[in-house]
Length: 144
Image (spheres, rainbow, N blue to C red):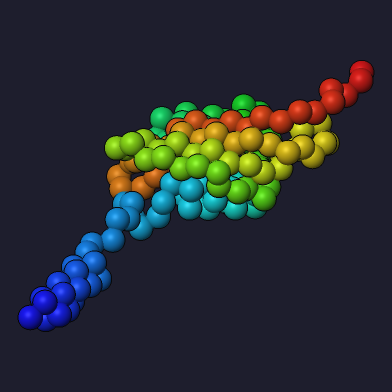
């Protein structure tokens, strides 16, 4: 009798676990997956429009409103934010906000440097968008 009860309990537990809904983020993509896709788009981008869909609406709208030299300068600033060989250290989701910490390699003044990456993302229309990002690393300032 006990064995029958144990077997029944194990079968029931197995069925519950195997049919439990999987915890996924909207669109099936986790924030760090979206960030990696953004980095790839940024790397290959020749224009703001090629990576701006990964940015939150406010930032995207501001960037896309720029013209001429301002647009080109903004594009160059964003390209400087590229981080190669991104590795996730920590990802935390709190409601419609996500916080990512990672490491990678940044480039500044022609120098490659180990970088610490921090990204804040926000859920917009079911997709994670970049609200703020920054990388830090130690470089030697060029002499003038």
